[in-house]
Length: 199
Ligand SMILES: CC(C)(COP(=O)(O)OP(=O)(O)OC[C@H]1O[C@@H](n2cnc3c(N)ncnc32)[C@H](O)[C@@H]1OP(=O)(O)O)[C@@H](O)C(=O)NCCC(=O)NCCS
Image 1: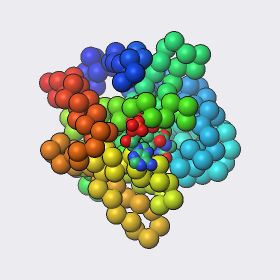
Image 2 (image 1 turned 60 degrees about the vertical axis):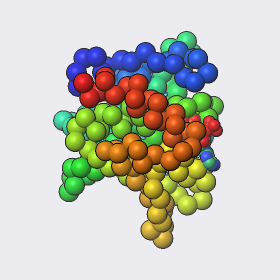
Image 3 (image 1 turned 30 degrees about the vertical axis):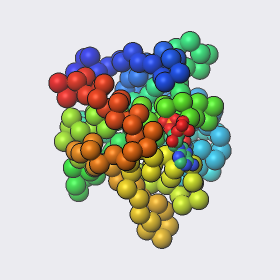
Image 4 (image 1 turned 180 degrees about the horizontal axis):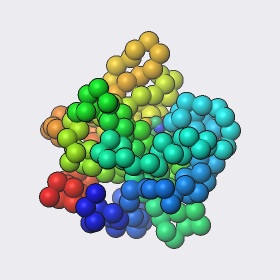
C-alpha cells in the first residue's frame, strides 16, 4: 500500500475529527477489545457466532494478516477517547473470481448512525477498486432489518437465498447509487477520497 494511504485525517458529519488506517498484526489487542465492546447481537450479526466476548486466535490471524492484495482491513479511530476504535471493515477477494470480494463492516453500537459504516464502505470500496475488484458482496440475516436498511441505503442490490440476504455493490459504476441521503454521503466520500487511492 502506498505510504499516504496509511493514515487519513478525516471528520465525521458532526465534525468529530477521526483518523482511518489499515490494521495490521500490531492491532491484535485493540481488535480483541473491540470484540468485547460489541453487543452480543452485533457480534452474532457480524461473526455469526455466539461464543462470548473472546475472539479466537484464528479469527484474529485471519483478520489481521494482510497477504498481498486478497484482503484488507481498515478502522476508523477517535484518538481522544479512552478506547479509540469506532468501527472496522474488511474485504476478502474470492479466490475463484478475483473481480469480486466479500465485504463486512462493524461499527461499535454506541457509534451507530454517525456515518462511520458509510465512511468505511467508501474506504474499502476505493482500496478494493484500486486493486481490480469490481463487486462487493455482503451477507446478513434476513431478520437484521437495521443492516438490511443500511445496505439498501448505500446502494447494495439485495436478494435472498432462502437462508441469508445477499447484497452486491457495483464498485465500477457510482452512477448506480440510489438517491438516498446515505448513498449521497457515500458518493461524497468516494469523490473526496478517490485521489488518495486511484491517483
Ligand atoms: C451496518 C452498520 C455497519 C452501519 O454502520 P453505521 O455507522 O451505523 O451506518 P451509517 O451511520 O454510516 O449509516 C446509517 C444510515 O443507514 C441507513 N439505515 C440504517 N438503518 C436503517 C433502516 N433500518 N432502514 C433504512 N435505512 C437505514 C440510514 O440512512 C442511516 O442514516 P442516518 O444516520 O441518517 O440514520 C452497523 O449498523 C453495524 O455495525 N451493525 C452490526 C454489525 C453487522 O451486522 N454487520 C454486518 C454488515 S456487513
